Length: 72
Image 1 (cartoon, helix red, strand yellow):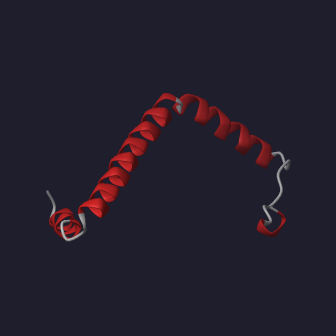
Image 2 (tube, rainbow, N blue to C red; image 1 turned 90 degrees about the vertical axis):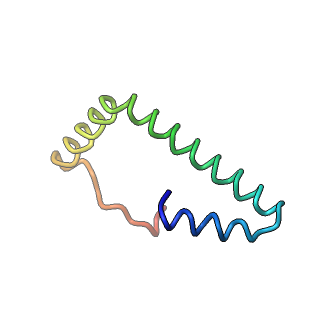
């Protein structure tokens, strides 16, 4: 375990049991979510590559325009 993680757990140990449970639930859910995203992306690298190629081709062909955040 890293020093930083050890320090985080020590600080978490100062929380109330209810707060500790909330933190633990959040952390476990975040870790599971990251694992799921990793699995999804690893299964779709070919499709994502094709989409990226298509987007670059459209841009090179002049069929794109700059994004204006004020118009979103």
